[in-house]
Image (cartoon, rainbow, N blue to C red; front, side, top):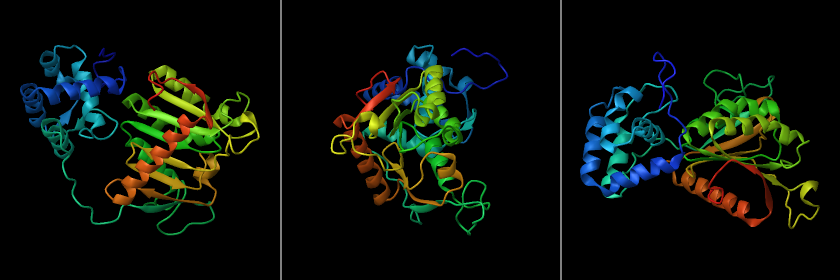
Length: 315
């Protein structure tokens, strides 16, 4: 990984996406001695900051000049290096779960949460403010629909699925930075909306900047067009999309009434529920939702408007 400025900490590079990370994890799981040599220097830095410079040992261990960047991306994807800025503090919990999985093939049990993680979130008009709810710019501490969407996307490791019948440029602009960052981290983005294949439509215009970003960073983005006159008038073969969802990694789902527009995320009266992993309801809801979307994408009921995903059949 080439550093343009020694004063700046490099961010995890996009590289060849999640495939290289998966291959590294497979190699570590298959070689106990290699895994031990991999784990030792990482455990030595638990609770301390880690960046590209701290991982130069990986180049010799893996005999690959790209190894420091690859290890950095692995730690970010597995949640051991939280946040978006480097250096970040290496966390013991996610690292231990990763190493246990590689050593035994088993997932570590996660501690029970004291409070249910499902939550109702809102978009509210500027004139309406209620304690514990809010829209963009709402009362401090309030959880809004927009904040919930941003939080989910920021935590994505593998895939973000967006279902929104209507999108527009300013609404997508509110989420643009998080979506672009997700692609840089190696997460695939899948968007299903109306009229994406019509280059003159508002929806197509709204996603153009995201398409350019995907090409610029080598990101994985697939956009599908559902329903509407562009696909024919038969609702049986071209059903109208009405669902509004944000699904992350088949473990978290934001389900509600808001389209990805400035009004849906900012000023309309909208409600939704944020179902997180850590509860049976959250994980099952996210996995089921993802399965339904995958079936939809393969059904022929929607058409692919464009895709930058090289292994497009596996979305």
